Every structure is written in structure tokens, then in C-alpha cells.
Length: 409
Image 1 (cartoon, helix red, strand yellow):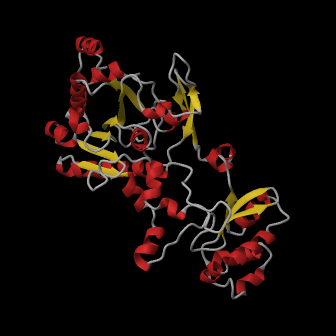
Image 2 (tube, rainbow, N blue to C red):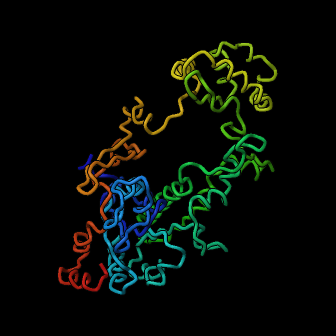
Image 3 (tube, rainbow, N blue to C red):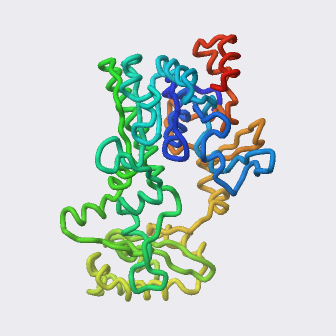
């Protein structure tokens, strides 16, 4: 795959983002073939390089560490280390933006404009530039100047109101999702916005500002939770591992571990009842319709748990899937790595880095028959490609020497 051209081959992306949301979006563009140039802070680089443990390279007295977190969202990029707070460094970014198709940034609102690197500044020099800003709360509104991290936004944008065990159960209370959901959604929305802006530019020749916020992205992902309140005045609340609108739909225990059983309509429930050897449930007025099952959820949950006794998790997964009932194990990454379906889908990518050795990551979920994602570069060392990239942008060897002496690169 390393030599295949992706659908975005030929696009030049300036990635001025840090941590998760922006780097993840830029990685998606890189996987699709774009030339992504990651501009990092001179000396320390992207903050996420230091967020560990776990580490790819542990820190020590004379060396900063390199986190596994950084490896997750920075493949298919070249790293340039620039101090854009220095006038010469800012001039470098402006020159790169003049020749780029897209610039991604996730600084606090207004920060880059102080250095002459805001959207209004750069579009004067490159009217076709697509400038994508990713922030906690967006470019407008009373919270626009606030910083916003994933955890905070999960709480403020409704995610934690429906995540966690319900009141009255041991351990009840709001719970964050175990992955940075708001960051991931924002990175994906940034890519969607950039692709839409590229199509607009293809038709008109005009660039534009794409404004993506974690807050908007998380709120938009509430889907049925938001619709329940907006259209029925109903607050769904926390339901733990149960679905608020379907039953049985949750985590159950077999003889040797946990599995998920998910039925979303009456037909699936009938198949489940037969597979569990309880066909009488089909005509039981407590369970005949989904609304009835939700109303009698505790009793049905107890009955399903009793019916699952006596067999292993693997046995039930096989029996239920043979009966066309959605069921599967709760896997860790160590389990998923060995899962036959994950293996068949080539879900894990291995790359070799001179600095880090073997680097493994999850493959892109985008499967395109003609122009699939490709994996050309492992995550870069800080500033690994500074001279190479700047020379491509027309910076002479003499100027590079001067910039180094000034501490701009």
C-alpha cells in the first residue's frame, strides 16, 4: 500500500494542530494521500508527545519521552519545528500557507491572528486557502475564548448525562466515555468540512473558513438523546449498560465471562426467545412488544440471565448468531487483535520507524475499492523533516542557516 496514490494525492495540508482532535483529522487526510506537514513548537513539539505513560520511548533526565498517544494520531505526516512567535518563523508559516491547499489549526480563538496567521490574514495572500479551525466552543458565542478539553465537553454537551449507572444502583453517577469521543468526532467533522470546502473551491475557486468545535460535535452526536427532549420533552437519563428504548439490550454473564445481547425489534426478540429455549416469552403480554419489554425490563433481564446459565460465552455467541440474534463478546484490544474478523479485515497496521522501531496502529476504517487509504510514513520525530520541507517551499540553504541561527527553526 505504501506506493499507492490516495484520492487526496496532490493536496498540501499545513497541520498546526496539537493533542487529539486536529491531529486525528489531519491523519485521516494523510491516510487518504494528502501531503500533511505537521508544524510543531520548537523544542518540545506537540503536547501529546509527552502525555504518558505508556511510552514508546520513556523519558529520562537527558531526554523527553515519546508517548504511545502521539503514535495513534500522527502517521502519514512530516514534522517541521518552527517558532512562529518569532517574526521569521511567522513569515515561514505565511509562505507555506501561500502554497498550501488547507491549513488546520486548533489554537484558542484569536491566538494565531496575533501573529498575522489568522484566516483573514492568510486569505489575503491565498484566497483559495481552506482554513479549518478546531476549538472547544467555536469562533463565536460567549464561550469562544474558553479552552475546551474532551472530558469537559463530554459533560457540558450532554454525553455524561446519559453515560453511567442510574441513580439507586451501586456506583451510580455520571461517567465519561473511556475514549476521547468529542475529540474524535471533531476530527472527523473537520475532515468532512474540509472535503466540502474543497468541492466548493473546485466549483468557484474560493477558499473559506471551516469552524469546528468540540461542543457542537458532541451535541450533534447525541441523536436520540437530543431528539427525545427536543420532540417529546423526555430526559432519557443514565441507563448504564441497558438501552433506554430497547430490551433486552445489554451485558449478560455466561459461565466464563460477559457478552452483549442486543435485540432491537420484536422479530429479533422472538428469535432470541427460541434460541434460549423460552418460546413462551413470545406470547407473554409482558414481553410481546418492545414497549412492553422496556416497561418490564428488570424482570426480563433476570429471566435472560437465568437462561444463559450453563454455557460458555463462546457457545452462546455461536448459538445466538446462528439464530440471527446480535450477540458478541466484550473484547479488550488484546482480544480484538486475535479476532478472526479483525485479522481478515487487516485491522492493524505495522510500520517501521528509525526512531521508534516497530509502530503499530489501527488501520483506517475507510475502505475504498479504487483508491484505498495507504500508510506511507510512521509518526515523525519532532522536526524530522524541517529542512526537507522548507526547501520544497523555496527556502534557500542560506536562509535556512540564518533561521537556525535566529532560533526560528
